[in-house]
Image (cartoon, rainbow, N blue to C red; front, side, top):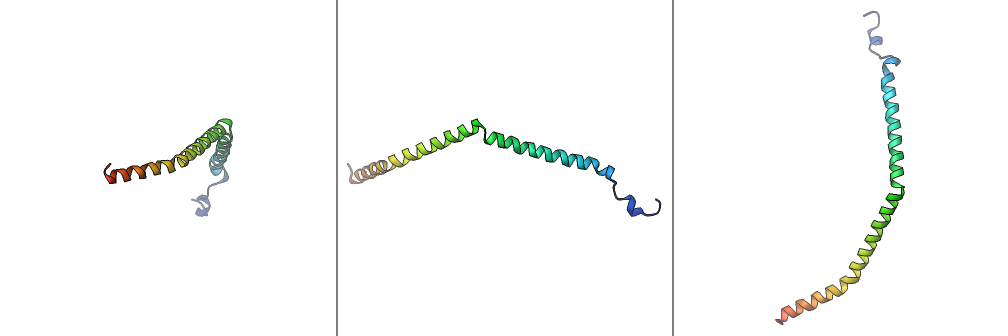
Length: 86
């Protein structure tokens, strides 16, 4: 060791270059992943899938709400009949 030992412990720019290159590659990878996710989400398949799921959800909800009142009425009538001993 010569002179100032604290200066020898500091890495030079050349020593940091692989880290900077790795960070740049990570940023590029993240940007490409975001672009791929954007393409996937806004692609035709995903929009068709979302439309199909929403259509099925609306259809099943409408059917359930439409059939719920008559079913409840029928169950009440049946429970009264059972209670009366018929």
